[in-house]
Image 1: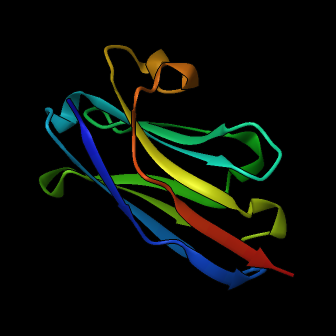
Image 2: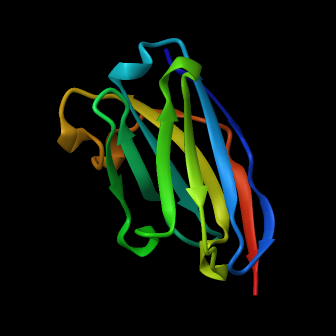
Length: 126
């Protein structure tokens, strides 16, 4: 069983930056894919970024490429999402998620993430 605890988030103006953190426990961190998802009011949840922790391979939603960066600190069992050049349309509840991975293709198989954090709000004002 994987437990995830998120931190970070907040309110910023357009063009600003934030960093989200997700501490994982209960499983071999190197065997996990860590993902960040978001859900805006009235919209479906979408996968924003994922990383296969062991190899360090990443995958991103097209609309955040070049602005968001997912990374991990393996000794700290922590995944991060750096959000730069934020836009009002990035406003959403952001969730950390995890799944056991065996292939690089697993990173962006968003529907298979089965462990979830509590969520943290990101609000971007224009």
